[in-house]
Every structure is written in C-alpha cells, then in structure tokens.
Image 1 (cartoon, helix red, strand yellow):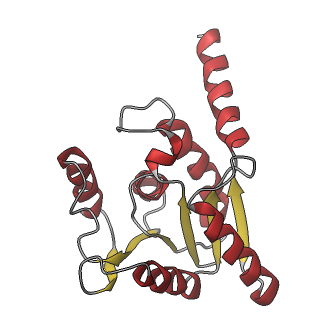
Image 2 (image 1 turned 180 degrees about the horizontal axis):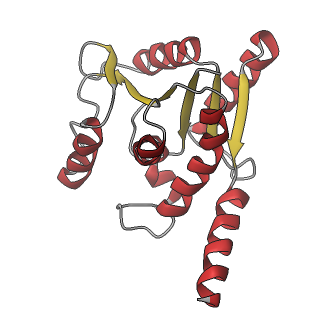
Length: 186
C-alpha cells in the first residue's frame, strides 16, 4: 500500500469543541499505532480531507511520525476552496499551522462551497487516489459522517481489493487505560 486515506468523525460528532480535550492525544496515538506498520511496509502518502476532527489529528500524527520516517508524505485534499472560512479563529489558526507541514494541498472544486456535489467529487477522488482507508468509526454509535466512507470503502474492497482498516472506541480506550495504568506505577 502506497497511499492511505485517513478520516473519521468531525470533532463536534465526538463532543470535542477545542484542542484541549483530553481524548485527542489518545486518538492521535491510536492513529500512530496503525500507521507505523504500514509505513514500515512501504506506505508513502497519508491523505485526508482536512476537516476539523480526526482528519487534522491524523495530520498531526503524521507530522510527528515524519521525524522518525522522513520519507512519509502528507496531503490534504478538500472539497472546495477555503473550507475553514466560517471556522472560529482558533480553529483557523490551528488548521493553518498544519498546512505549513503538508507536502501537497489541493481543493477538488476551485470555488467556495456550492453544494454537496463538491463532497461527492472529493470523496470519489480520494478513493481513486488511495489503496486503502484508516477510518475512526464506532459501529455501535449509529449515524455519523464516517458511515458513508465505510460503506464506500467496503464496496471498493469487494470490487477492487481496497483495504479497509478501522480504529474503534475500544482501541482508543485501550490506549487510555494503558497510559493511566503506567501513570499509576510511576
């Protein structure tokens, strides 16, 4: 696998409203744990849609991993220009800080938001350009933005051998439990 799509919930879908939330470091560690074996097997690019939530935390994880794996590349491909335009200033600043570390950035539609078709075009491109997906998704949580990605990835897996990988809430909880246990011993 050379190119991996990494995505999942938007921050608000996880009830995370700022970068100080104590769950974010565990989410990033779960992403890192899944990425390291893939990098060691030859993963070259991590690509995200760059939306506020799992996408940007994955970008942070990749930026950290690039210190150890300088060959790893990071890309954000948005649905439309200026997706962050209506975000709060703190979120815009955070996003712009990440953009400084991205190896490739593009918007599928070269205009501002115009309709759902832009997301469809972005997702079609992301699936065409990647060999697999790492999706943070809770099977039991019901509806959410990652559900569409999972359904599309599984269809592509059946048809083309596309690789579907998941990070579950249990994976994240396991990391939190390990860290809390190690803190108890120190």
